[in-house]
Length: 274
Image (cartoon, rainbow, N blue to C red; front, side):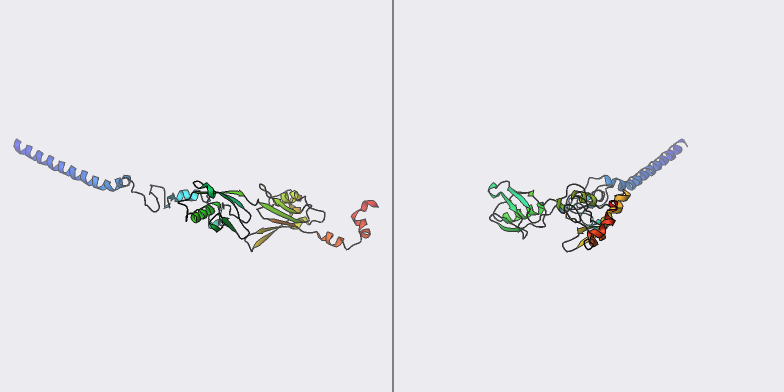
């Protein structure tokens, strides 16, 4: 009897051990997919160089979506078209600009170029290259491509030496009409002050700001400088951009004053003489 009980206990222990082994195996199989994300990262693609990272979002050419949205206006001249195109546009060459071209390993080709009225620059022993409308980096690449025909892998550096300074124009009823250099952040009323202020014939309430949008289109903004100055509120004072044109028209009374004899107007203009 005792032997029979021992056999039953032994068989029960074996069955229990087998059951525990099966449960452990089942848990190991269920946990195996959760361990997969911790495996080594796959090699990056040779085309984009982007590596998938956990929690970083979608990658675009090696830059995560989070990083791309946090830096929407980098110094590459590009921006969000929905916000008006270029947010931080790079300077583009124009006529009469002067650039300095240096060759690291061929200094005999170093030269100083001026953008001609037709927009081209004349390279030494290489002909003409269109420069107007290009950035300095784009011109540098264009010059390197031209000289690559007879120089082995030329290393070129282009520096902007002289360019047209930002300016604004003031005309009409201002004391000193003309072209002024735009330095810093200026508003319309500040620009009028730089141009000598309004004359006695100026129509302060209808100052016109012309701003060129493209080569063929310009927009006009009417500014009531009289109301702004009287109310001591300059919130509507426009900030200038390079190339803006300010025109101060003549007042109505000054237009008819030249047709009225001065003797008949003296009583109205200077009542203190009586």
